[in-house]
Image (cartoon, rainbow, N blue to C red; front, side, top):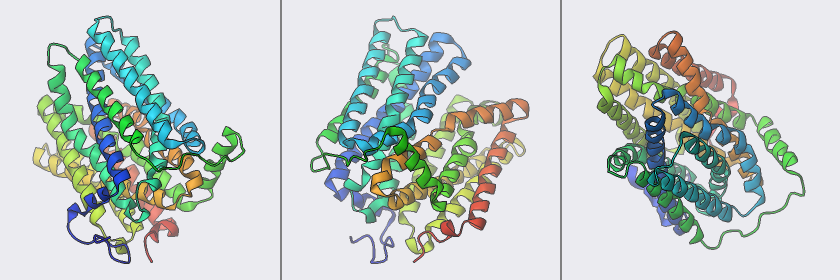
Amino acid sequence: NSSQDKKGNFKGNFLDVFTVLRHDRYRRYWSGLLATVFGFQIMMIAQSWLIYDLTDSKLWLGYAGLAAGIPAIVLNLFGGVVADKVNQRKLIISTQSTSALMLLTLGSLVLLEIVEPWHVLVIAFCIGSVQAFDSPSRQAIFPQLIDMTDMMKAVALNSMVWQSTRIVGPAIGGIIIATKYGTAPGFFVGSLGFITMSLAMASIKGLDSKRPSTGKGMFQDMLEGIQFIRNQPVFLALMGLTFFNSIFGMSYITLLPVFAKDILEIGSSGLGYLHAISGVGGIAGTLITARLSKSIGRGTILSTGAISFGICLSLFAISSSSLSSLPLAIVFIFLASISSSLYMITIMSTLQTLVPNELRGRVMGIYGMTFNLIPIGAMQAGFIAEQWSAATAVIVGGIAVMIFAVIVQIFSKEVRNLGIA
């Protein structure tokens, strides 16, 4: 591997992250992932517009988010157990195809002009349920697609897919919805993305066709995964950091419309600009993370990234509300996004590197459950914002992430020593 030395330290420029695409299996997977995530972004824009257009209610927007979020939270652990029991490639093909069929159905209901709000909620719930089984399987199949030495770069490149489509997807989704056919083409494009991922997985050959049977029941397998994490201080700390990121850190995204409209007074176009800056920061953080040398120590990257994220979130809120400075707000939201990528990508790659293969699906299912708590985080942030202010909610979230990261850094020797020879 020309981009790494014998100690695993990255060499060369920031674009070395793309060298992981030399693996044919991963390249096929990544192409499918790019399509399905892009389709997912289009779907989310179309879904939000449709439900608001049908109901003219902000509350129904929250219902749609919860309809998709609740099964993702509740069923991810079950999805992880299933991922450890079945052929993961076939499961991904099934989940992606099922999601595509649901979006085709919703798009057809829109075209026929018979769609009702409850249709949107039911399909959102069903897709969220299916994705709870899809996500752990995609995480668990990683070791069969790459060399483990390329794990950090593969995780970084996957993150780049989400960050880049977050910039482009909403803009294209808005253009699609503006056509005379409304949201229907958005759902069809989303369906095409899921189908593309399904075809990409079908084209990957040579993966394990069978999963070893544990001879245990589902709940026993689930308990085994929970006990493994409970007995591993590193995994407990990483799950805790993810939990605090989902509940307190990422909740600022929900409140960005308040900052754009009422605090910074930059309107809807300014809101899009804030989202774009956040996405660009995420991509920058992804490239930086992939470039960082392992000799720095993953534990240092984790704590530094999380603490910086908390500080930058708080400074974003202060510069927006107290100083009314748009340039400073842009700088701090950009730096916060870089910091978030630093520690979240490191968490993912560390989990993937350390977890035993036979427990990979269950552990990543639990990780997915903590990661998918963002809708719950949005609720707590909304409550604080309603009682006090949006700036207060973001500052509280930033401080919470920062304090937990400091606690981990002080009391967890295992995390501090991650990546140190």
